[in-house]
Image (cartoon, rainbow, N blue to C red; front, side, top):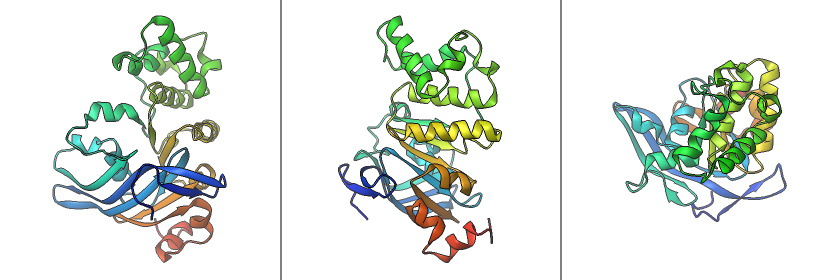
Amino acid sequence: MPDNHPQAQIYDSHSGGERPIKVAARDVCVEYNGKQALNHVSIDIPDRSVTAFIGPSGCGKSTFLRCLNRMNDTIEGARVTGSLKIDGREVNDRAVDPVVLRASVGMVFQKPNPFPKSIYDNVAYGPRIHGLALSKNALDGIVETALRKAGLWEEVSDRLADPGTSLSGGQQQRLVIARAIAINPEVILMDEPCSALDPIATAKIEELIDELRENYCIIIVTHSMQQAARVSQKTAFFHMGNLVEFGPTEDIFTNPRDPRTQDYITGRFG
């Protein structure tokens, strides 16, 4: 496995080229009130690609995801050890402000969670509090760009003052993605982003994920192996707090090395 230098490269068979490593984890362990939730996870996640985390419920997928933006800090009794670096910077360093970290590591949750504000203010919220826009025109530009990247501009450009909650479920999830990318994150985390959506809305989100990977490191937790196969270039299989296997998505699904992976993807458990 490559070292955790930010310039280390990892081969991306999907694009036929090299991708710099964005996230480097070494021996990451997580305990909740003394109960082990994650065991010595080491993984290198490439930039400008989609990495899927699969595995049965309670296997550690979301726990590891929460390590990346220090959401575990908010859980009483949580203890995280090991090294976790983004672009070579240690996430858990005491000098790292979690608020600043969470601005560079965007999060999209299972259920769409727009703020009780207008569509415009949902997207403008982050740039405002982080001082990314020096004028109203600049803010307008950021909002439009984020909504375009999220594939939502054409649908909402004439009703930006409407509440974000007035949109359909799929539109709300794209609004949340626009809100995340409005502050130029380094990494976008998605925790079951389509589980509350219908197939048509899911297809739109998956299409969006495929477009966004050209500019972002995207990590998606999903229970849908079909979705992992469709959207990701790399897949990590977690089981009982362990990272069992990690590699190119095609290899994981067609030629897994570990019998536990084979059993999971063929439906023998999970």
